[in-house]
Amino acid sequence: MKISHPQLTMPIYLKLASDMPWPEDEKVFYLLTASGLHLGRNHRFFKSCVAIEDWPEDLAAQKPFLKISYPKIPRSLLETVVGFFDLVACRHGSEAVALLAWDEQEQKLVPIIPEQTGTVMTTARGEVYPVDLDYEVPLLPEHWVLLGDIHSHVDGPAYASGADMADEFYRPGLHIVVGRLSEEPPEIHADAVADGARFRVRDPQLILEGYQRRRISEVPSEWLAKVAAEPWSPERARRRQVRAELGWQPGDGPKTAEPDLDQPGGHGADRNKGEAA
Image 1 (cartoon, rainbow, N blue to C red):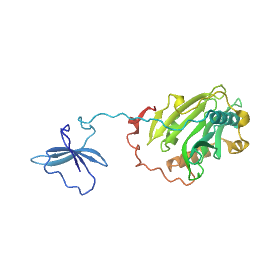
Image 2: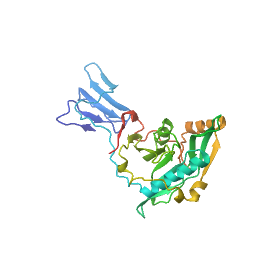
Image 3: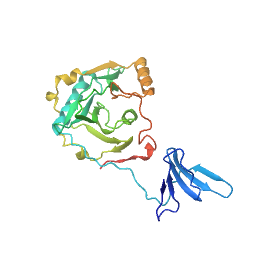
Image 4: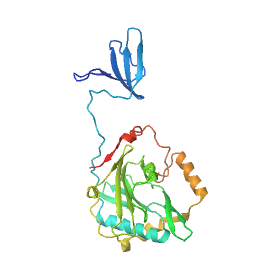
């Protein structure tokens, strides 16, 4: 398929079939294929097709972007979730997670607390600190849409760690981290992921209705019953590494297959960094 325009110095061909006829009448042209951009040439003494990295200068530049239209997280919900994180930290010293789903029928956000196990280590002084967190996304009703998650870093800073970014690469949506739980208010960091690209949400008002103080007394007991903690061990670390090599990440559902490496955004993700608006 040929794309021509008065502004194009050379035509661009889209290779839509493996048996696409070679453009014999073009001296030089671009060929866009599943394996990348190529430069085709019909010379007097040869024909060539060479992979290139530089795109046509005639094309206008485009920056990655993400404009948020997620429903805002109600203040009461956020404050209750932070209270939940506080109680888990006091009981276990571990991280915790709450998932966020959108109820299409009720038109509201619904918190989901999955079964989860936090790994902790104890220092020689007897201080407990979190290492990682394992959980599975439960099967949801058909009218619920998973929008993202909120997880805690206990008393650590709120930021997207390397492990967080790896875990969330194939999980589009909002990913919120709550840290410095010993402070009020705690630190809150938010990113949005789309097609493997990560965008920082610097303005919390885009996704939050606000925050005043944690609601410890309103945390449902069934939420706390979903959380367990166990000490770090080399065996557990090896199990996690093996599962990661097989494509499993914390937060995958119980029927998760290996990640689709060909999904949009899987290539060139380093170029797709920016801020959400």
